Amino acid sequence: HWFSIVNSLVILVFLTGIVGLIMTRILRKDFARYNEAAMSAEEREEIARDMREETGWKLVYGDVFRPPPFPRVLAVYAGTGMQLFVMSFFTLLFATLGFLSPANRGALLSSVLLFFVLMGAPAGYSAARLSKLMREENHYKTTMMTATLFPGACFVMFFLVNLVAWFQQSSTAVPFGTLVVLCLLWFGVSLPLVFFGAYMGYKKDTIEVPCKTSPIPRQIPPQPWYLGMALALPVR
Image (cartoon, rainbow, N blue to C red; front, top):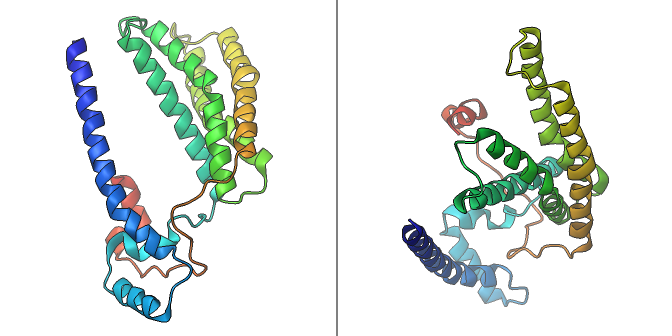
């Protein structure tokens, strides 16, 4: 089993490196051309002629790093996603090493909660770096939303389900003391770690993007009805 796992990882890393090398060589020339500041009139005319013939992502290269209408929400979701990713990585790592057994569901769930609480620092760091890139001014609100939005939504849903179990006098209902312990872990461990990670992230320099953002947003043509938000969200 170990040989198969290592073999699969080596092949995955090798193929990822090849794809990354090919994409880097393809995009490097385009980035250098788009970011060139000192160009002659003939070069500008040639570039404009080439861009009229371009399709796909090259048409929106100047809008890729434009801040969205709600940059704070994007930063919060990115930080939460980083927290979930690191939590999943360490959970799978410990399960692969044999420290966690899928048969013992209580230990697995406790480990997931523990890793999620301890991974508050990567969440705050990622949210802070992205928030600084999008020039978000209210750092405190972004950090607080990163620490409370996703855990708060999960806690409210879990509390409502557990409240129904209490009323039904079910044996699967979680005791009130356990909920208090979860709140202490949330506000006593996870919240300070998120603020610590955000503090370290805001101290770093702003992320340098590979291409410049155009001052005028590119106009998006009207989309057909089957590409609207109401039909696209259920599909995704």
